[in-house]
Length: 301
Image (cartoon, rainbow, N blue to C red; front, top):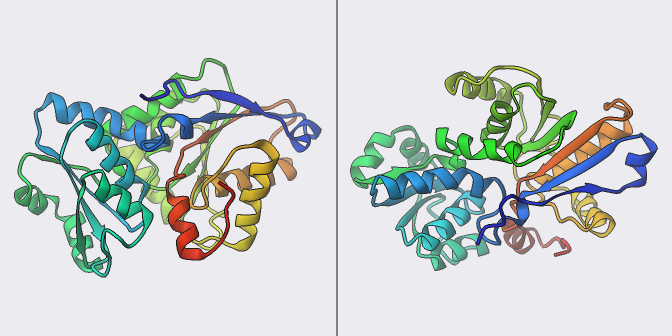
């Protein structure tokens, strides 16, 4: 069973009190043990669409450690729907890491393709639809119009006002849903997990495509720790220190970078005194086991 609405609570930290700030966190990581965070939000209405339209199942894309692949596999299994995962990397197998093992154990059929073929299939979904007729084709990361609709509910569940809402950003779907739901009520800040300023134009294109106003948001790209999937020893130490300090576990790819950015913004007086801030914990914790196995770095679970 999903824990909806997800809980929200205040974070008590001497730094926040010193700066005169209230910092809260919405724990979407606690929605479901296997379909957590923004992945649950993004899949909700897509699964309803598959059932109501009597579609055959879901085909989607992802890398070796994809949160989206793991969550889609679990969600389809729970709904007794077939799922197919097209995985970037023809050198991989279902036994390559905990994420792929989990997806395979959930019944997802994994197809391992070269990086070139992966790119071609992503760009030519008509071809993929012909190969898998009757299936819903979900993009990498799971962001589409129905996913954005699901992410709007993160905000509608919050029954108090905040000056700032902060989320991590990958494809931008969660941020787009929040921005649409907030309608300018408070400022939305996105912390990109990706290196490069291309994320700004891609996000603007997404907003334009989904008719979401360009208002009252800021997308920050300086907290990526070297790029997507890049994790330093300092970040691992920060994750462990934070877990001991506030008893919240953040993942190294998305949410830890978001929380690190928040602490730095607070230290440098970005937020005016008496501001009320809410952070969105978008999940992603399934990837930690694979990260530990690959990087040989210890994160406190």
